[in-house]
Image (cartoon, chains in turn purple, cyan):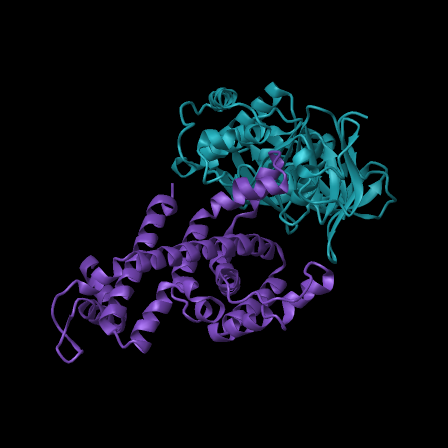
Length: 280
Length: 352
């Protein structure tokens, strides 16, 4: 009986395993193989083993890019959680009807493509566009100026992109939060603000951690926003990968960079879940 | 005025009135039970005392201080929630001393108090455990200890026994009552369990359909319920349709009975209900010296459970239960015609 159920369970897993195998493992293996391939005489590359592309990565320029990318995405994860968490908490205090309306609205935000968002922000941050002129109008600036391209512009647009995701990632945990826990804290003398920090945040910590990691990995893959709103020094590793693959036709090096990116993502996920995510 | 005073309190959620015009006055140090079926407004009333809901109308005060607009965290209360609401991210000790941490007590002070409270709740040595490692009964004790950590003036419990199994429940009722008397703390317990209310309360407030139906000591409510709803909710009661036949008398079928309690003095001919408690009516075989104040009927079932015997008598289509001890056993069988003696002091007239 026990073995029978295990067998049927295994059979049930076959389609998804095959899907993941074909669509994720095969490309991944191809990238790995390409990243260690050796060049041929005519400028192409072939199967082999060489670490020359990783060697090329191990220069300050690329390492600095990798650190910048990781730092930028960590900051984005942090900022979007700081915005999304209080918002989502307040959202869960509303009635079920208005919650649904808000969630649909936020889901609709997700349908906006990165391209659209990047160019919208470019206009908003331009000299002739919105925000700078408003600053002049209220008297905070003397004359209009362009805010993009800049690191701040990249940050703003990526945070904008990440906030709806953060809300959706935090919503399940916050809406399941037992309301009697916060009420108990209130009867024990905690103000609403102290209740928020001593009960709501720690109880939903696993969701906050996994939400942060997801946002980190998600924005690490952004390629359009850094290009459109950033100077070359604000380009992330993903932009460089695109650059190598599409404009320099250097597939082996692009693959090597992709492997590095993958290693960064994997170690962040592993490290964060190991040190913060484990249910204590 | 001292004590806990609830004046003209009404609570509406949209169009629904959860609590309507409640006026209650309790003495300091009393144990009060709000008793009623689910949806009767008892929990809402408790939450208004806690400050978790704000009354739509009326005021709540304690020891002369108006609490109506005081926010929850500034009221001096301790509350035990139905689910216990223990913080899963904190250890048992940290749960108990949460209120002390909020008020800025030192770590050593908190550890001492946690130990003291756990000893008081007969749970020594669990301060470092996680909440998930505790049984239901242990969680309840921790919840009680947490609510009492700062010696609040008012102690509120929302269906505190509902998560426990039956044996534990009875033991905890007695223990909680002893603890409350020891501390002399004004306590309000919400329950739908009449035994719980009878075991613990100084004062029982019977609620139904958003209103207070009756307030009184457990025995007052048991002996003199004001209407058939209260009579049916507290204990088992025998209700027989009757007509007033005099100042202190009713007619049930052909029998005339004297009554001492309830809505006596109504005009003759008024339809009423005659209520008696099973342990106050006596079944006798017909033919023996016919007792006064009795109705006749036929035994329909006998349930002998050792310590007590229940005799069900069919009186003209209405069931009357008599509970006897074995030494009063009248030796009747199913189908026997019997008289059911209802002494005047045991008879209460209720509005039909």
